Amino acid sequence: MNDHGLAKLRRMADQIGTNFAAIGHDKAVFSTADHIWKFWDPRMKAAIFADDRSLLNPIAREAIEILAQGIRPTPPPADSQFNKVNEVGHSDAG
Image 1 (spheres, rainbow, N blue to C red):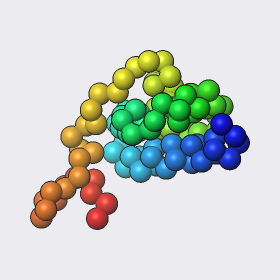
Image 2 (spheres, helix red, strand yellow):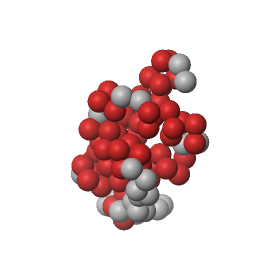
Image 3 (cartoon, helix red, strand yellow):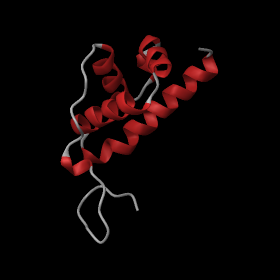
Image 4 (cartoon, one colour):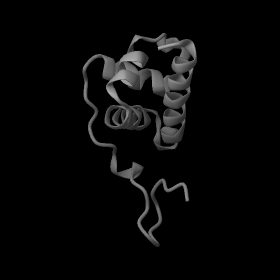
């Protein structure tokens, strides 16, 4: 993958980590890892695993390190679930 493609993957991983930061660092790491594991294709994962992880924010870096070790994330904690209609108290962005 070229430098532009790697920069885009880093930006995406950082954005995912930043999105989950509100639920606390440890939960955000595992939620980020879960998202990347489920939604990134194998080429994207292989490229980010081989990249310089020091260029990622701490949440994304730890998530990638977990996945690169072969650890599969557990489902996200319940407080990272979005609200249902007229429900309050979760991390709904809307």
